[in-house]
Image: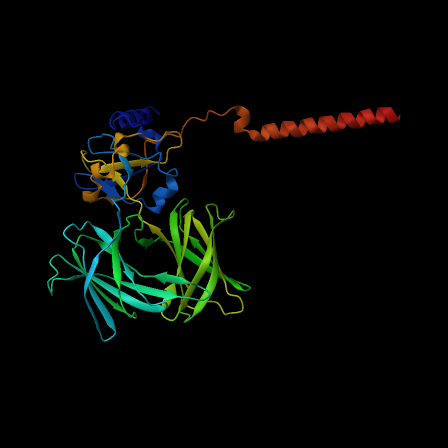
Length: 395
């Protein structure tokens, strides 16, 4: 007991006022100097409170490090760009876009395609000078417009954020590109797979796939459903649960594949360990080569500059309030997020100085069975008294 008290005292004194004994879990974060970002993993989501109000970070010198959710870079509203050098050869439409002397960072181009129905691909390359041979390939994106049980149109090509002035666009499967607009929408970041295990069951006319993300409260933004079946349109319902027994409906929609078009995603907003994906097959056979994957956008946290790595993360406390830092109130441009280094999250470990908080509940709150027993006893006494009174009246 004395040793534990000494360890707790040392932890409190060496962590800039952070009582490390209040936190069940700890892990290192390796990083360079300056502002740092890192991505919480499923284990951290599962063991910390939702939103991380119980997260504290200390640096190598024991100072508490302010942190916040990494702010999004500045968005660029959709704006038209000049289209020139139009051409068409061997079924490929080519245009060059000139963004002008002022060309902020963008991550997408919205193409004006006159066709009502089409399926094609767009390759986007960028150049600083616009000279032939100076273009660097940025991305390849499928574009389409389809009608039927599923109506969908997509003419936006997305690529890594860039400030190239000139964009070379090559498109197949379309008759022309008559105009274009560029924009930056940092909130629409790429979706990444979330690690999970899955089981599949056929139940009547439905296929049910259950995903286990290993820890509760793991955020998921979409479920991707892919199949080798050549052509299909299937209704889908997705339910979520953190205990594996009580499920709530998260999303409903359709997935489809036909004529070179793939619409595999169902968007949702979930923070659950278990996802139950129900695919309605009707009178068709179940989908072949079925693959169901949970996906999520990055949700990095940002540490303030001015502290010494390596860092130590502490979380898993039930009785600490959320931190309050000036750093959280700064505008995005003042946080250094655009130039932040990416930290490496180490393995989670049990905090050896952790002490469970004292139980402040009353005796009856801690032993509710006693109260239940007293209520049952009182009910039996009342029933017995009533029965005796009835007998006296009838005798």
